[in-house]
Image 1 (cartoon, rainbow, N blue to C red):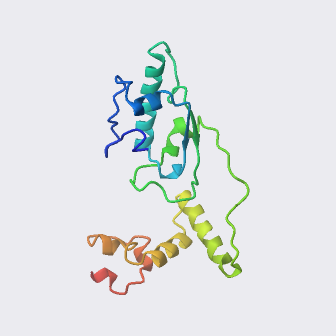
Image 2 (cartoon, rainbow, N blue to C red):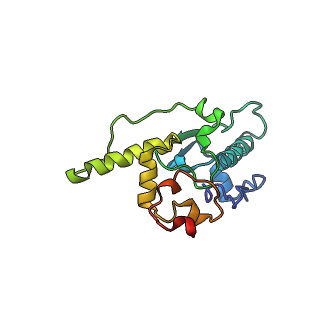
Image 3 (cartoon, rainbow, N blue to C red):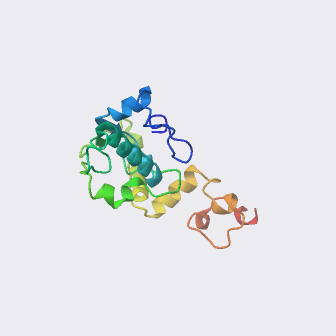
Amino acid sequence: MHNTFDFDGSYESKLDFSKTSTDKVRAIISLQVLLLDEVSMLDVDIWDAMSKILSIADHARHRGFREEADEYGSVHVILFGDFKQLPPATSKPPFIALPRVHLNFEFRVLTQNRRVVTDVSRTDEIEDFHAVLHDVSRGIASQLVRDFMIQAYPLASCCCWLNRSVEQDCWVCSGCPLSDCRSQ
């Protein structure tokens, strides 16, 4: 997205739609279908920035002759992703939380799991991991999630290690495997 829409770190685009002779501006103006993969990583800010660019491109495409257009202009936006993954790394809400997204998009869910486990000894591990992803995608701080975070990231998942000024127990520290965690 950053490359396609020339976003800087603040999601401001460097594209100038008054200069329709540039290749990238011409490409975005002529865009009919936008396929976005790994959308669970998109936060509300990048979604808003992308929507703004698509709207500007639509106005440039129709040169003001179109009075009403939806947020994405005449571009068909097709999303692919797994919302049972971790949310965006920006700590902002995922774009799916926006009512204009979840109320206006038609969502289809794959009903067949294509993840194939051939090693029978790992079946329980994979099922537990899917349960962790399920809980994380719904914001549930289950014991399974806690155990997974502590096992996978023993130091990084401990609030006391990351922020030595933590004054109250958190759900991770209560099960911290580090015996001297509190004294650090």
